[in-house]
Picture 1 (cartoon, rainbow, N blue to C red):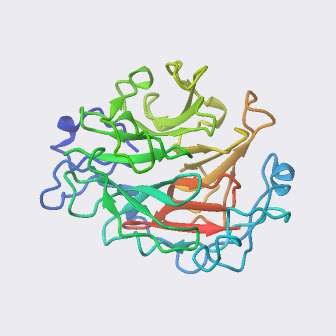
Picture 2 (cartoon, rainbow, N blue to C red):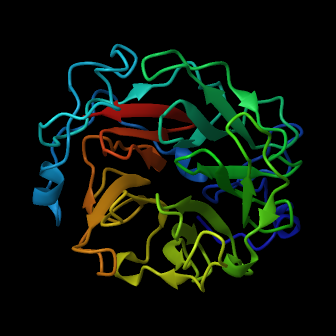
Length: 346
């Protein structure tokens, strides 16, 4: 993504975007959007390569629980699917499946789920919201139930661009990026219960910069937050910590061991904080943004060399993923001209 320093400065070039720079004539009424330019790359047809190169920590990952390969999430009962562990080792992900109940004719991306996987938030360019890109929510009654029709989350959206929602596992805190103040900043909102409305979003000022910041993903403990920013000139991964959930966030530090001259973004830590998933345009993928993972020996250690998740990547774009706490279900955006929400299991 090219650096976006403000909405006004780019209006003469084209629409402002939440994910990747590139310019084209804006659709009618969307003169503040920045085109997701990388989505114009051609996407390979047919199933993705199922080959996978094990990265650092692969032996540790192999000891994690596994759910069945031969069932889609919507074919399994609540007792068979995801929330019930078994003893099989992790393997490659299944072929990704589109979440047709959630997708639209426009671009749909940035999925994030609650820990029980009954509530999903995502960003969409579909018509009907107050801004060109808005945050939507859908729910379901059980892991094998159908998703409800997506609804706008009115208390989070603005007339600008709102994207990269990241909901906490308990469903009571959500962070997201918004260009409502000019450049993209991270915001946070909370609610008392899952059925309550979200509070008025507040900027995470201690994490802000004069550049664009996106995708603030909370660790399960609520004490670590990973996000991505172009404050260093291109998109890189950053981490911030705090002592308690009521404390202020510390100064962000770049995850420099994962930085390249290419893009890195969309990070999510696993529950142990020893496995990090993210997207990157670095060499070694299949084209455009691809999904990668890196591991480390302890939460305070450096991450090892990342490996691409080859069975999920295509010649198009894969970005802004969310993965379940048992690492068995992964949700992400994928496509060529427009992104669609997908899920894959293992």
